[in-house]
Length: 592
Ligand code: ADP
Ligand code: ADP
Image (cartoon, rainbow, N blue to C red; front, top):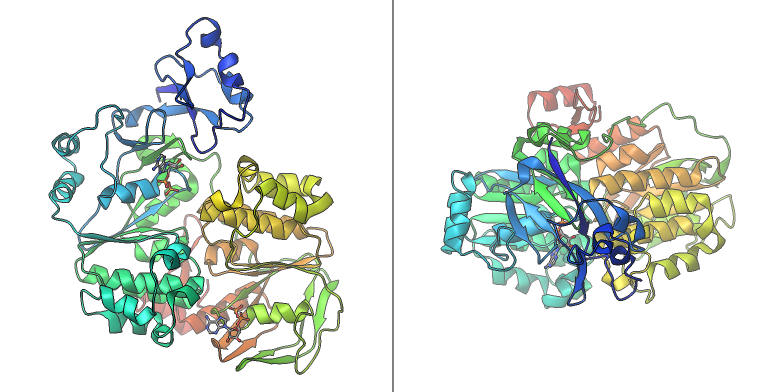
């Protein structure tokens, strides 16, 4: 494919005040006197697209990895939809909103998913890549001539489309919305459907609570209910499943489907591939160079779109956007577990503020990852706190004393006031320089790019990566990692799964992961502990068991069946009542 190679700057990382500007000093064009090629303008580094030859010398000189050389694939030239300033991030093409359909967006963070939905919701007026003279709506509409988007954008420009969105960062809701849950919801009930949403999302018990007191999962459900209750033509949901357990994810999916039944358009950004697959009618893949440019693929059927995304090759643009496919070698079954237990416990019982947890006897071996599955509020954290000696069981005991636990809570808050590097050096100590930590954690999770950033400047995904790194960096016998996948894109979910597995390989340590993303569970689990019962009232923890059996029991409890995609081997949710679903139920095989 003919392509133009140029150097581009990532504005999030470029910091001309802190570096020696070696990119400019060493540019061969500048040295030959063509000073316009790469220059500073108002404190911003500018690379001239016409003059740059894409030699890549500046890329090597930049201490912040802020410059990269990219190939602009030929088919997208002339398809710029929006650019943030000179050399700023550029988005090519837009996803298509379809009446009565759920359209899913999948792709790494930083390639324009939020920009796309901001344009489709009218928050950003697209500039067609021109930053000096913004085009008017007439020109924008003409630009999309002959595409399904033309009519949509015309109606958007005329104020004839009403869009409501659920933002990604639900943790910021308490800063802008205050008061009792009930009052907040009543204010937005434009369709008179509040009761239905409250029931389905299980919000009944929260109605008298104040927004500031809600947990992440509770805020997520509140935000979903509020979005659902509004009256609009288009509903945009940015990462609706973060912090929700599998039961809640399935119920949220049901709610979203009801919008579609009413003929509404839904656009969804989702990194839980099982949910994306289950909900979407079409999928757009977004690819590019994070922070630099992003391309929206044409719409694909959901199965095909997700398989293309996993494969990393997009046939319609003839672009390989990832060097390697994400492959599914389900780890499930047959893994040899060592016979050296890190933790051994008898049958136990613990009562805590009206909640009772009953635990079957069990042991956790060195070198294994046990995934705890079950609803929120069922006692998973209580169980680990017992192992760590923070809580004493009322009955039974932990036979291994003084087990050291490193814990990543579900909700990560940027409470530390220094840079990422200083935090990680502090918690990891001498581990910081170990080859495991540098290669498997810092590098694999892509943390090296943000080492000099402060915690409160990080995005949700970056914060999550730092929290996982901090947890894995500590010296411990048992690592408890609660929902590592929240806010991470699909690639990062698999990278985190690898970093977690490598932590314990050949070591006298074990990991317990609490996780709700089925594909991540598969990628990480040696054994499964099923927690069941009634959230907040009573919980029952099974022995750690063979993953296939564990997931089967768990999914039976969730009441949902899966099958495998014949091409990629990935698990797919069966539509309730479909032939596949009925067959799976008849055979008692909820998990394939
Ligand atoms: P995604 O949702 O896929 O993570 P976004 O659309 O949020 O991606 O952002 C893509 C890139 O656009 C980001 O890396 C960021 O650098 C840039 N960007 C986003 N918003 C702005 C803005 N208001 N001004 C300048 N650059 C922006
Ligand atoms: P998990 O780690 O499975 O979410 P925890 O061990 O934190 O569960 O929860 C059990 C205890 O915490 C109980 O005392 C319960 O009252 C309380 N709790 C935590 N989250 C919830 C929730 N979402 N709903 C009800 N109770 C909860």
